[in-house]
Image (cartoon, rainbow, N blue to C red; front, side, top):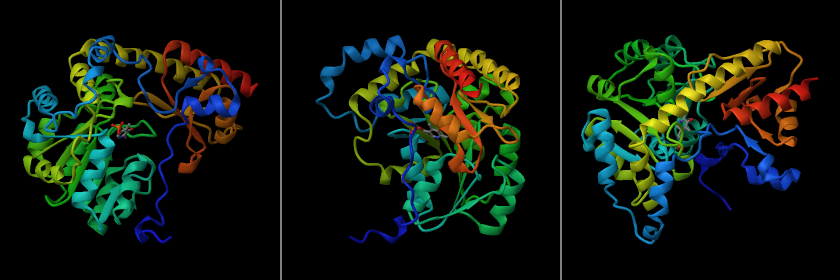
Length: 365
Ligand SMILES: *Cc1c(COP(=O)(O)O)cnc(C)c1O
């Protein structure tokens, strides 16, 4: 059968391997598997959200409020905006899709060389041409050069960047966007902003300041990372009313579930849990940095909940390491497909990280 031509060079997204697959393929007991591959919050669903959801399951037969009124109001309040500045997506992934759909269909998208794969996938699905900077990490000089050369319709800035973990300073980001014409949509993907702004206030992007200053910018946030609701699929976009109105034209009805909606609303009221998760994250990250130094390889200074370990100029090969760890029940992300001899490891809980260090050490001996 023939399919749309535009899909011919689209590669389906390769998600982190699920625990179930490792159970099936390697016969490892589920309780022995440590998944550090999808940047999930290792502290699980917050107790408050669990409580509320238990009492709420019998509402699952009903569609959610399609206006997502309460969630939008809460997000608007959190960010000092109005609900007209908010669109809700099934994960911020879906908001990325909306953005490309309304703005760059059959046009041009500019991204960093090594960044979140969904920008490129959705761009290609909608027939857009993807332009990449030369450097793996975000280099705003190169972004500006490529912008002038190619006049893209959308620019994606991933702050901090997945899968490398680096993050631009807010000041540089604002200076950059001020040089972009008002008809180019600038997407600031803040999936890990909670982590970055905790570690270094110079990285903190205030969505209100961003969209008040630049009516052509949109900020993306998600409940999947610091808020520990990856399985619930809730994300959002914050932008000028004009942009949001247009994004709503391509949003399918009831695009998040009744239970997802309730869990996101509840999670927003549980700051204590989020703050705890973020603090622990950076305490545990220190151990990865020390581990890398002790074993003679480099890492990228990370502003997120994962760390990228670099094996260039070492005897290690990231594919061998990823495969061997997998056989031992430790799932991490190999970055070979990005052309890097490196792995990305989600910062887990202390117990999970202990397992990683232990298995890695026996492996390299
Ligand atoms: C995880 C992630 C997202 C969004 O994930 P959703 O679960 O779809 O909300 C968006 N951007 C980046 C860079 C991510 O790592």
